[in-house]
Image 1 (cartoon, helix red, strand yellow):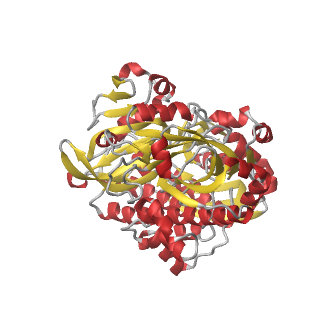
Image 2 (cartoon, chains in turn orange, cyan):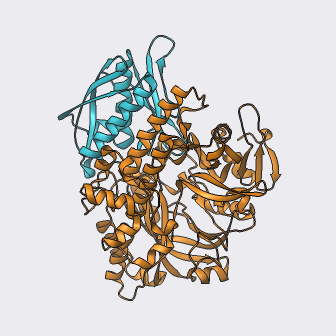
Image 3 (cartoon, one colour):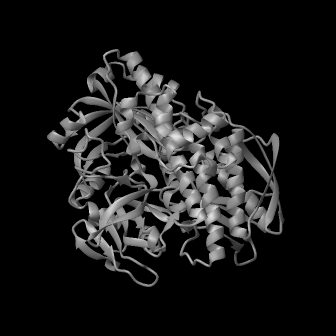
Length: 476
Length: 139
């Protein structure tokens, strides 16, 4: 990205001054190196989002921002419905409520290593992963509707996991305001066999060891100790979310054309929040969030069963579950007053600080765990929401490493077998149905996640708590 | 239909681009490029025919609809497609896609396509009259 077009606000924040059709400025978080590495398309997309009706504050991009579709990946933007604000299907993305959950295991990394091969094989056998994989659950119409209304709470009611886990999920595991009737038959059909499946692409299930603690007090509060093993699951709303995204993107693009709404990119297709289409999308998207929460709940339960089967001494407990492709109604202080806003996060994680009322009592004194995935060969991080800058970044932080290069280029540079062997040599066991998939997801295709979380910390978005190293990775 | 397609780079996802002497042929080749996101198209046997139809008020959205119709068929039938025949109508198309059931061991599917985006979406004629149809797909 050409930095001469930006105004440097601090060492870790860069402003795009509003011009032309931009209604608000753009604000990109990151250090000079990260911004220089970002594609110029990020600059363009941050500006484009700033042109949308009813946007307030600024069009934000997190330190891991990269070229997305419509919004940048790592983009955050809030809209005021009372000021003509919009909701955008492209701004949420196809994988509605894609997210990450991390379980404590009560095991040490050393204990895991004693059965590492067996654990990798069992997890790969039990967790359906990759294109065309199906779950064990077949949903009929009534149970599909109940799942879309009930989220992870529905899954717990069906026997997947425990009630106590729900408070460690955003929205306590149940997104209110979902409208299952706004979800099409095609979306339901796509999901019929896909409950409890990981998917493909950058989705994964990892067993990780806690390699470093940055904040002793918060780590203790989170239940993280040096040398512990944890399990992290990254996946979303599967075919149902993809189909909702596809259908509403089309409907919004058509409606925008009829309204004569000139958008700089058709992918920014949107509808006023206070319109029948906007409300229908909101209801369907919230049902999609529930699907993702239920999906991760089921996978989490299956994972716990595998771990408990191999390690009777294990005490799995959910640390937290965050979503990074959503639009949620939140209250933020802006220009000196509290405003109810529709906050889009596209490849960005909520990062609520200590004392936030939406956090469960057990986490309120500490702040929200922010789960940041790296690549299967490097490291992941657990951060905690920082309070002081919350109004500025709308309580948001980065969500992952972000790609350094396209899948196309990665597949030309690496072979899957070579990546798997190299990682095995470093003590990381990868299991995947597709060698080409592994090559496209090679660790070298991703940016340095350490630089991104340091930038997030120094920009005041979230504070580092712990660094995790992978031991086992199941890739879709 | 002759294979004439390519992928173009996108940071997180991947772009599909089909060329052809006609717009219909460019759509057919964009569909081959879509399959190539998942697997090597030559590894797919064109054994089973599936009929599809879709409509949209302009040709760009029609391309997105066409690719999304294929994404839906791939997902729900658990099939991959290799050969395509597209017949264009006014704001609509009818098509036949030939393929086979997914075989994970043989096809080594790299990634699942979630949907066709409207990013870098264009359908038009290049200098010389050749048609080009393209968009970014989310994987």
